View 1 (cartoon, rainbow, N blue to C red):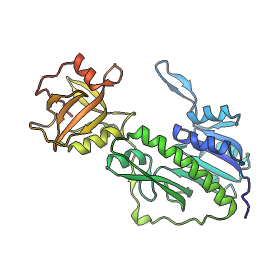
View 2: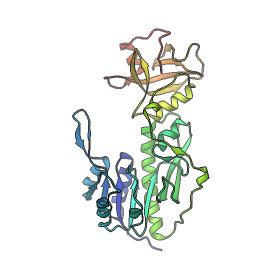
View 3: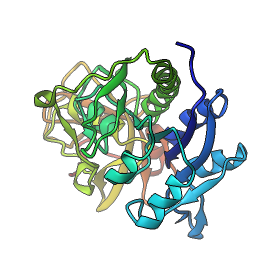
View 4: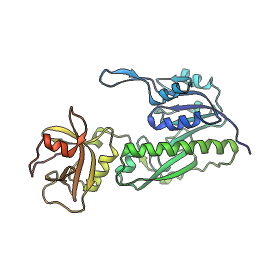
Length: 315
């Protein structure tokens, strides 16, 4: 069956969704409108700033709708008035009500940054890195009223290297997701994709990142701390306490040799940074940020804040 050009409403907010929007904008399908979260104050001046998806939509001349609550009757009606064949949701940030999910004849599809049913929820990329996973991926699914519980359409695996952080992996998954989305829409319009129910008994949940997740404990093994640091880089950043203040950690390296001493003790400096004893093994800190300062290589940080052997980082 020949692919049919569909009328699509795109719903998204964060940078992760931008490649998907751009891919649809360059396709034969017709974007009837984009729905994004309201502008929020950002930066030092706290001036209202549009979402990355809104900025992208305006570049393409696509009408943008913004609602404080998508579940409000006015919001639902506003989307319905665009009369879409299909709604595409990518990192939108709100749960869609049942009457909106049921409105388009082709349904609502979502691009999710994990291999469902693994890592349902708000933080699948960060949690996969934290858990030391070596493979993740992207899933497209038909949405239902549950949290990432809908039938699977397509999936694609993506490896997680030992050095990649959340920012780098998110960029890669966004690119893969955009291509998978276009393939999914084409398959749906051609009738060549059969939705597959998820194995709900195998589901895991990726909870939203909390403040408690950001504080490093030096009693953890070096590998676990390394995974935590890269899972939270570049935002919000893992941290330890140095001289009574927060010291954010953005890059690290697990050392093969194990150091000697109490957890959190500074062992020695290297050409790239500083080595700290952990609960199991030693960790080399490569990039940091002191409160009120810019991110900097750890070797530069040491020049401004000399550490003596035996100095301690706490957490």
